[in-house]
Amino acid sequence: MSDSETILFVKDLAVGYEDELISKINLEIRAGEIIAIVGPSGIGKTTFLRTVAGLVRPLGGEIFRNAPKRGGIGYIPQKLGLVRHTSVYHNVDIGARSGTPFWSEPLTWFQRRHTRVIDAINRMGLAEKLKEPVRRLSGGQQRRVATARTLAQRPKLILADEFLSELDDDNISIVLDAVKEYMKESESAMFIVEHNIQRATEISDRLLQVSQGKLVEYEVNNAVLQLEPSSGEQ
Ligand SMILES: Nc1ncnc2c1ncn2[C@@H]1O[C@H](COP(=O)(O)OP(=O)(O)O)[C@@H](O)[C@H]1O
Ligand SMILES: [Mg+2]
Image 1 (cartoon, rainbow, N blue to C red):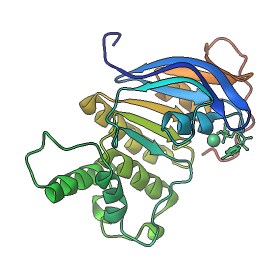
Image 2 (image 1 turned 45 degrees about the vertical axis):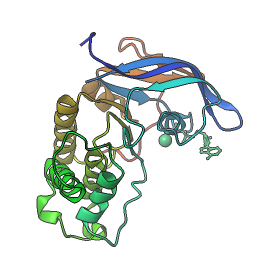
Image 3 (image 1 turned 120 degrees about the horizontal axis):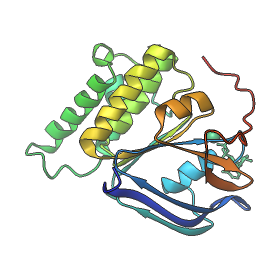
Image 4 (image 1 turned 90 degrees about the vertical axis):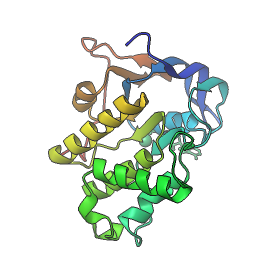
């Protein structure tokens, strides 16, 4: 995998608001990689993801994103931000509408958009819920809608904040297998914030932890990690 394309390169990055939360972040993520970030709550994991997504201004350093400016980075927030009274289709179409350019697909704008929506809905196993208002779905299904919305965008980098935490084991396999398949086809990469270190170890190629204001590669045999007891685990 070492000769695969660099998707994100981060140099001496500092993230935070008034004060730095995490500083001197140096990191490279390549196509096909899943990187998990663990650490106690309030330490700046979400802020880091939002900074990479371009939603929070960095306090220092540089971010190089090898992804289309439009739609190239897909962010699945912890609070999903779905439109609850409209259909699954409508919510996923929001992703397709703001997605990466369609140049290589020889159809009209509406056809291409529709194709992306249906493809993402199928990947997430939601075909039968197409017309269902989102508010009628279970928490796990809503998370799949949010994931489909991001896949419909066809991003090169997926940023997922605690997105497995409310899912049961069946839902986790559906979501993970589908996302991995998408990543393989599109040669994209993924950052995932995960409070459950066991799960993070299982799903990721590399594990990073936030410790004393730094993002460091986690060594599995090195028991420096202190996570708070997780409450919402299934
Ligand atoms: N928009 C904001 N403005 C100022 N401070 C914030 C903002 N969002 C979060 N914070 C603070 O930044 C710290 C880190 O938050 P966050 O990145 O959400 O941590 P984590 O995801 O690791 O739980 C917290 O102390 C939080 O209160
Ligand atoms: Mg967070």
